[in-house]
Image (spheres, rainbow, N blue to C red):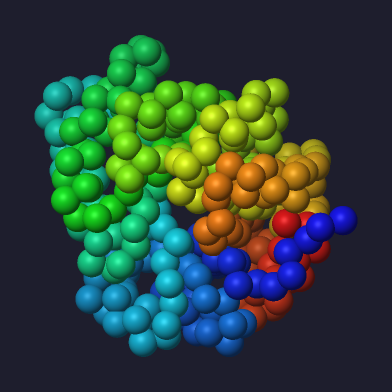
Length: 273
């Protein structure tokens, strides 16, 4: 069976080693000969934007994305405007660090009106696009599993993400395919084909059975039920040849020493992705 032959495309999504500081995570990547990282904004803030850029540049690390923008819906117009302003700051951070993709986790409804929340997401992205374009940053809409609709995102299928993205050019807005969030969708492979030319990221982890926790229950690749290699081949057929982010929310993984976790990530990535 066809498999990845190297770790050249492997990207460490920083949340996978959340207990490590940015300097520590960079050192783990350098020792592990991993060339890509995806940074989270709270880790950038801890280290400082200028220092984060220095660390990344000096280590020769390339950035697959910055996570996260989004969380657009708000109960009032003032709240929605404040959220848009925060997204503009996220765009500026991505541009300063040299990342060309800002991942959007679009946010939940502030009340029970999920339709209005989805309308707000669409309107907010439209407002953000010109600003992002002027900074050379693409917006990657990441659909989240429906179990997160009430807490994290009202955009829950790749079809929804595609519909939003296709109102803009591929140079402005695309989609992020996260295996954990979309593996269950009966339209997944049809929608991956429909995403051709617009896939800005591919994230891998696994769905453990039984699922131990809704947020912190992601598994290491190979520990669950997701057809990771089939999905990887599908996104490649749709034109995506970029870095593949390992993004795992799991306390057991977080508690592992960084070098040990990286060794396991590389092993499972080669075996299952």
